[in-house]
Amino acid sequence: MNPLRELAKKGQSVWLDFITRRFVEEGRLERLVADDELRGVTSNPTIFQKAIASGPEYDEASLALIRAGKDAHAIYEALAVVDIQKACDALAKVFEATKGADGFVSLEVNPRLARDTEGTVREALDLHRRVARSNLMIKIPATREGLPAIERVLAEGVSVNVTLIFSLERYREVLDAWLAGLTKAATAGKDVARIDSVASFFVSRVDSMVDPILEQKGHPELCGKAAVANAQLAYDIFLRAKKRPEFAALLKKGARPQRPLWASTSTKNPKYRDVLYIEELIGPETVNTVPPQTLDAFRDHGQVRDALTGAAAQANELMQKLERAGIDMVQVTNKLEEEGVKAFVDSYEQLLASIEAKRKSLVAAR
Image 1 (cartoon, one colour):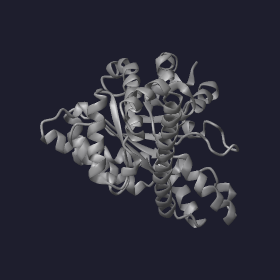
Image 2 (cartoon, rainbow, N blue to C red):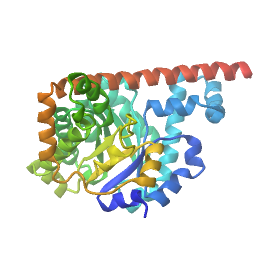
Image 3 (spheres, rainbow, N blue to C red):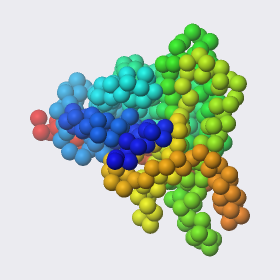
Image 4 (spheres, rainbow, N blue to C red):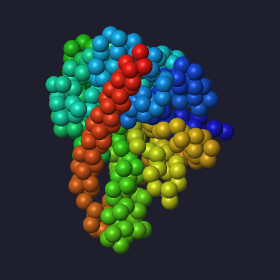
């Protein structure tokens, strides 16, 4: 029995947080779909930076773009668009079989635009136009400036993966942006059944920040628990939101709920079980996006049970213990958002530097 396939029976879709051109072209993505019931792909600047800079895989395509006079940013976007198109095509059967509920591939807007509402909207719509696939999701960060962009892009009929969510309050605001965006789309006569969205709630980084503080304050018994409790409470917010009249009104028009997506679910602390952030976050109407090594680990020894239904009370108790231990979750999650935005910008800058270095080496070789 493959534990990954069992997750679907619990209502959870598994997506892969990884992409390279060769991985898709060699059929390895399609094999994961067939063997493990993989249902989607996510990408980000860090993933592309590693893929493009790691070897000669993109040299031929890059050289053609260099000959066309493209700069590093334009080269990256052109390479990424093709990769995303190929992945979308590989997952088209999943998209069709699930009637548009799964089979998505996510492409992130330029992380430099995380504090720029207008720039985010323009880039999101442009990437949507260039990729031109029904199963594309545009990733937009859930910064203060990102929230109105999320609403506007959804209202235009574009599916959105809302990324970099850490706090419960920000998650509530993301749900409000989704409701407002789809309501506007419905009012404009758009088919809301064709506008999908997920809310990417980042998990393991919470423990990475909270655990050292707990150790310092003499509360090691609480280590490794904050991230899961935070996500469990987010799931409770999702369940409560579904009971709102405006939410129900959209569902009647054919909309699908904006599912919580658990992101950053590879285990950073070697003391913890390597599938901790999958096993403890299994539940209906959720997505978990995992890197290849975590996917392999769960296939090998993952244990499947519904860990989310009814977990809110215990999660609230844990949060109270953390507060008494001196943990300010608002401060923690605000800092994580700042660091998350910076990390993606840094990866993007490294990506452009890698492309520029490769451009110079290819030109010199010519």
